[in-house]
Each structure stands twice: as C-alpha cells, then as structure tokens.
Image 1 (cartoon, rainbow, N blue to C red):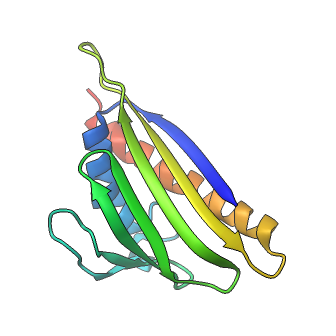
Image 2: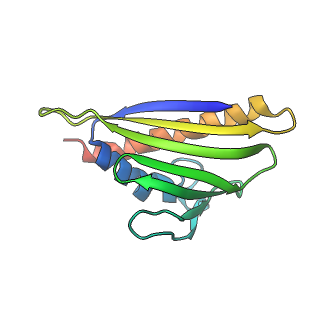
Length: 145
C-alpha cells in the first residue's frame, strides 16, 4: 500500500527540511509527548544518515538517505507485527518567488499490512502523517516573514 500526504508551508524548502530534522524527527512530530520519541543512534552529524529514532509503540525508524534541503528517506528497521517493509520519503519542493517564500512537503509511505490489517495500518499511518505534518506547519509559523 502507499499513503501520501501533502502540505504547503510559507517558508523555503531548505528551512522546512531543517525543521523536519531538528523538530519533527527527534521530537515525534505530535505523536504523543516529545519525550516519548528518542534518538537512539546519532548517525552522521551533517547528513543524519544512519540516525535511528524510537517512536511511541516501540518502532525504530532509521534515516537511510538525505538530499540536503530536498529529501529525507527512512525505513522502519524494527517494527510492530501489523506492517512490513515500511519505507518513507519526505520531499521538500521549493516554490519561493522573489516576493514570498513557499514550499510543498510531500510525505509518502509504502508498506505492506500483515494478517488482513491493511485498512487499520493505512488509517494509523494516515493519522500519524497528518499529525507530523501539522507539527511541521506549526513549527514553521515561527519562521514566516
């Protein structure tokens, strides 16, 4: 299955990318209290490749690749029994003009639901992406000009 969510922010793509890696990724992006999400492996200090976070529910997500200012790719490396082969891609597309900063964020998740749990998995991922994008939007308000 594939789930995709989009959001528009009034900041540059690079600023949104940085906020994602500095706020949403390490603090869980609205999935429970920030302390419930924990970075358990630091990864590369510049690219964050190899960084692993544990999210509420115990799943471990690892940043597999980043393209500075435009993309973060991650994979669930240890997860629940209701989904398999979870891969996420977050793209940051700059739409800024000379007069305004703007970007689109597109978050895609591909995975397989297990044991007839496809509908439940899709619902849970949809809610999680919606909350994390909302957290990114809220954090971006402080950077709007």
